[in-house]
Length: 414
Image: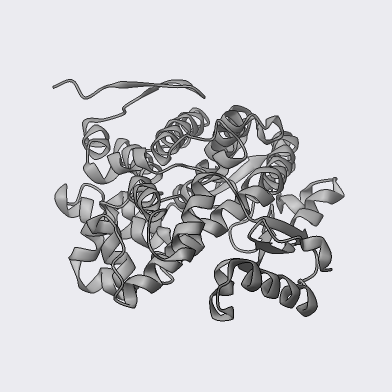
């Protein structure tokens, strides 16, 4: 069988398969599952074209990793065939542990389980299936491989993951501010003492990269309408889980049913293989198929929230640099309780407060290092002559309140 297939990607053009092993990994059901998980969650409620998947992103990241390895080799750095293949596998599988609806349900279906931890578990299972062929890829993913730059390319402040998703998300949303010169950045990468650096002449490309990331977060990823939609979906799942725990029948596919009935923690995945096997069957279709059924459920809150979400009757939302006042919260909650005729103990499903933050660059840990023409290595925040790079290192936090649309929020004040 010919395993050297070619994918026609709308962002980069043709993407080739490097080896038979990579083809076999892509063919695995656990990887094909990524076709059924959208890259940007519910962002299509705002940006109509945001329907691309984690599958698209994984292949795109693999393509950029190959371009990066070629560039590094052209500068005299030796990378063995096995390291090459392992680096491609590491980036290809970096998101394989993502749950349905991207980040929206990461902490509602599961109990404090990060997708990176599940990606690692799935990679370990695949490694057993392929008789240890992913040993080096796992070390690169974990950061235990001696040549540290491989881990920095997979997970870091200037990793291949970010290079792909910024360009890809910008392409599919039509938000041109997120476009970055990934080819230029890749050509400027180098290695010093097994650490990734950027040649000084590439500093403006990095500044553009950081600025684009900051703009994409506020304009796209943390868009208030997307926050509202994702918050509603989280409330729908929480209500379905509460009813299930109360012994009330709630329709769900078998994989979703397990995670509604149980509070699954990391220990659950480590101690019983059933949980990981079931998780690997869970995708966006389980969620939306259930939500479509729940609009006819006898529970008013579950059915109402499900219908609002499906019909895009999204919660109103306010964003502010300060938390909503107690008076504001109390007024809205009282109005909701009266309008919907629900007890005050259930109002929290229709009124939600939270916060979101954005830091385009964190210099702590694996920062972005610039190799100056004099041979010095400086953090981008010190090397750049633009003051906004230092400003991007500060975490900006915004507080939000969102609630069912029928209530006239202008009667209250923040």
